[in-house]
Length: 189
Image (tube, rainbow, N blue to C red):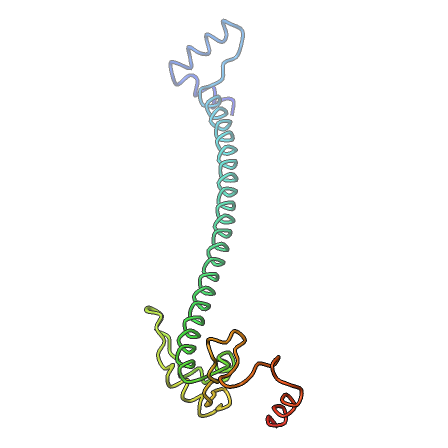
């Protein structure tokens, strides 16, 4: 191997001069191939270390970005769920309002019971215009199935001039005697 190096030095004029200069200064000069290779190898190691550090940093940035996206996704899903809940509540209120107005005209005295007992399949909500259809059929069906929810009696005529709300021609409770009160109670049975 030493012979091959000697031959390589002798082959080029630069190496021949380098050898002469080295002999004159007393230090040995390396062949251009050996120093270059060592230097390139050293630089390669440095760049490889930098590349590994950059890859680690890039991976950590990717992980942090994914975790942030996961947090944003959770927030987005929570907001979507809130939106759905609000829409469902709005739809229920709209249905309740529509049925209440129709039921009040029909003489219903317990609208909450009507909404719980009635056939919900008869009601349809248009989600774009938030209008309810089928409320008339809903109330009519409930009136047939649950007649006790609807009153057929006319309310007693209350004298608006009387502050105690006495019915026309009757006395207030304070004005009645004990015998009159007992007679009224017996008539209720």
